[in-house]
Length: 366
Image (cartoon, rainbow, N blue to C red; front, top):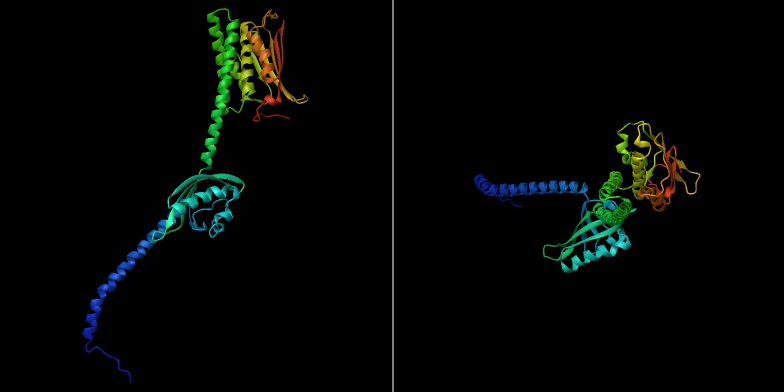
């Protein structure tokens, strides 16, 4: 028969429990503190993951075989569940694989962090990622994998490429502009009768060129509206009376080079009209109209400048700079047809600009 030992006295059991109770309470307090720390860490990790999902930063871990063990965001055009458990050679296109894995193998072999920018095919698009790679170590210091952060820097890289393009374009346009100004200065000096006349005429032509540039800058240098170009160059004469100048035609947008050349030609026509033609008298009228000529090969826009009601105009004996700008410069720079006539009723100018000189932003019926 089994004999169960029973304490001689209940007081002895109570004393033992009293002695053990503080130890149990201390253990309970430690467990409670650990649980709270874990809950805090889990909440912080949840907030961290939430913040990462709303950013262009992706954090992930990989083992030594470059198999993904965790990842914060979808990446490379793949969902999270389609990345975890796979290796780089299973999800990264071959043309970008070597650049990425070279950084990671270097980190694994040297134990040092690595940084690099790599362009990766992200589905239908190619995107740029800035990688920061850190060796992942076990408690004994052995490298067991990698911890990586990848930042999508596609917008920055595209911005840098666009800026380089703009700088090249700016250099090209600056050279062209300086060539135009140089030629304008030579021709103005050749036909000017005095220094004061040169300064006055050259300054006016520079202002005309600047007005065309202002329009181009407003539209990001993509082109300039024909109606805006006309109103800009004839602005000083619109202030007199709206009835003296009429402007009418469909929407047309000119390429930057075409806008500069035509702007100078309009300035010369307006200056001549103000000095000798229809705009030199209150009764004079200037009509500027344009229309599409789709039947031409290639299609074109025809612009008509017609003066009437002003003083009688005679054909000049010598062609001045203004005539050269209208006739010769437009013909050469825009491959345009130009007919400039000095009839007794007033100056008439017909300009036919081929569609190749029009901006793609302009409306065309073609």
